[in-house]
Image (cartoon, rainbow, N blue to C red; front, side, top):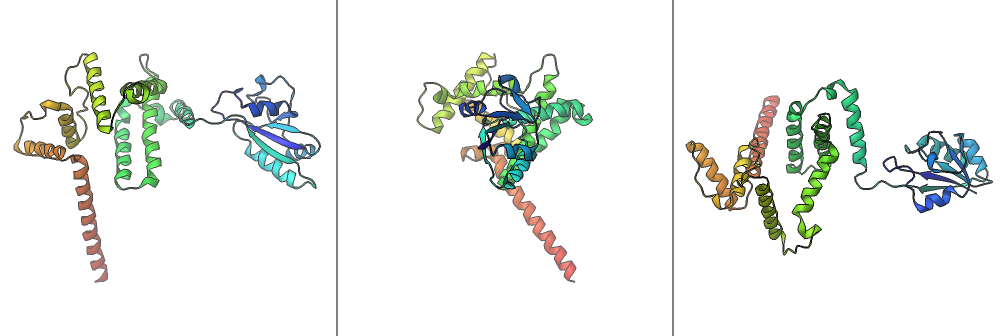
Length: 314
């Protein structure tokens, strides 16, 4: 006879089980390790509350037992019942039936839960504001950029997690304001925007290539700015970004007005013209200068290291 272990995801509402799981729940004696198991209110049959792994393993030799694993997984019990079963002369068959599965993105719910506890229970996290978090947001964004530029994709996962934490943190802070918003509002806003700006994916618009996608994107953004009462193509450009990136974005967004001549110092105008030149060549001036800066850093490091080695040898 088998011991059937039904597992469930803590990120799926209790009671939403697979067809196979519901069949199993009607097939044998039901057992659970706690009277607080979230599935119990959805089960009309009697459920025995017990957790003695050796006894359960022995009884499964003669009859079908169904163990309702807690959403946390009951790893200690699973390990103990496995050892107990192997110690028997005729071990029972042990089958694991997933009752519910995580959907893609389900672990984001864990992040929201952790952030809520940090905000309520950690003195440091609890006192932060949007303004105090700004340096960390910028720092994490640049660390993501650094891993990509270095091709360090092994570190990229962690750095993206640090950056995502800042997004969740800001949403949690905003949630406390009377006129605020929460992480669901943030997600809803970006989903609506992406659907609206991709009519070739979510609508009936046909495009020939990526260039046409980009043209449609810009046209939709222009219509959105007009609907908000802003006729300037430069509306919404963040002026606090690095100067080369700022100049490049202004020129790109200016469209037909990109040839207008600004005023300023001779050095500033020459730098602005270099950004124009990069744009004409299809290059990102920020990325180009950063690449040269990294090369300079490496050259200085090599010279400094060689000099130290020479001193050591002497």
